[in-house]
Image (cartoon, rainbow, N blue to C red; front, top):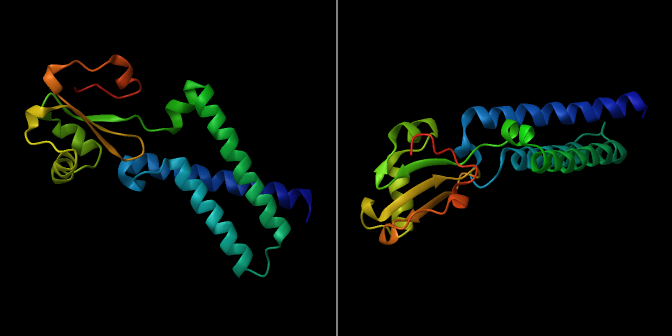
Amino acid sequence: MTLQEALLLILSVLGIFTIVIIITRVFGLRTFAKMSSFDFASTIAVGSVLAAIILNKDYSLLKGGIVLLAIIGFQTLFSYLVRKHDFFKNLFTNKPQIIMWDGKILHKKLKSCNVGEDDLIAKLREANVHDFNEVKAVILESTGDVSVIHNDKNKSIQSQMLIDVDTEQA
């Protein structure tokens, strides 16, 4: 294998990752619940490489190893950049969204997050909510999980609990 072929494989990995992340960002947080867009891209890429190595006679273990190394290297670099630089964090990760505040469902937020009211109510039942007034906030997390903060004795929410949460309509 030539250096040019190895570089082409690495560029292919970067291209596929970019496409999957863009698709996930466009279609929203619920697309792959419990996985970040990057986790999903990594999982698909590794699975595709493994399948190609096993099923395709044209792929060698060396080529597969180079691609897997590129995926893991890119994943490590990406995680570092997201942790250390707000620009990358804002560009590549979804912000958690408040979809219910002070007992009121934020219907515009539900729609923009692609969450149905029935899904929200099911999550409220899971959180042992008996009445909407018992809810201080419901947050759709960046992983697609739903967090319910109860309105226990009208306590205020510590500001640190809402770091990075889009509170625009709350």
